Amino acid sequence: MSPMTNLVLTSTLQTLIMVGSATLFSLILGLPLGILLCITGNVEQGGIIPKPLLNNILGRIVNVLRSFPFIILMILLFPLSRIIVGTSIGTVATIVPLSIAAAPFVARIIESALKEVDPGVIQAARAMGSTTKQIIFKVLLPEAMPSLVSGVTLTIINLIGYSAMAGAIGGGGLGDLAIRYGYQRFRGDIMTISVIIILVLVEVVQVIGNKLSAHMMGKR
Image (cartoon, rainbow, N blue to C red):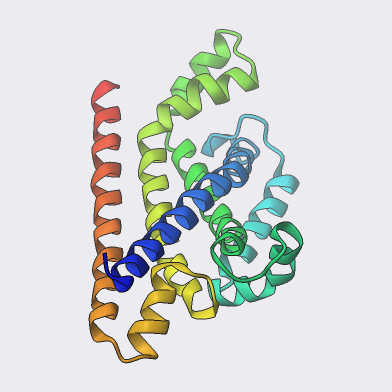
């Protein structure tokens, strides 16, 4: 196996690690936030325990974080990455800003998916004496699962794009490969290979996500 092939495989693996880890951590951060945004909203929009002030504060925080361009956010989070993982460059360090950048996006996706649940189902569960926790985990999340899968699919695709941008400032992965070898060393073949792999990753994720969502819709 040639050195360049090894380099492409290593960069692809780095991208997969970054995207996979960031997806997991963004879900850990975004899922509770999305649920809170939904249940504290207006009753007409699915709010189970309306708290306008808390909902407004959380909504503004999410909007502010979503408004930051990823490159700028990554630079701002260099100190945090250094504190958490001991460095601000490389594959592992990039997971921190990727996760934080995707978490608000995940929160809004989850909020939107939960709000699509039929209010009648929620009212029926409430009438049967279900607690707020039971409504969230036994009604809202299961009913919204197809939409949630579609949202997670979109999140992964966005993270693939973010990881490529991270290569511009030492993030590693296919973006770094395309810039350092494809652009700076005028290797058009490396640039082309990097782009093709990214496109294939996006297509594979989209196909799998669509099939999972359709399968869940069919079982409802």
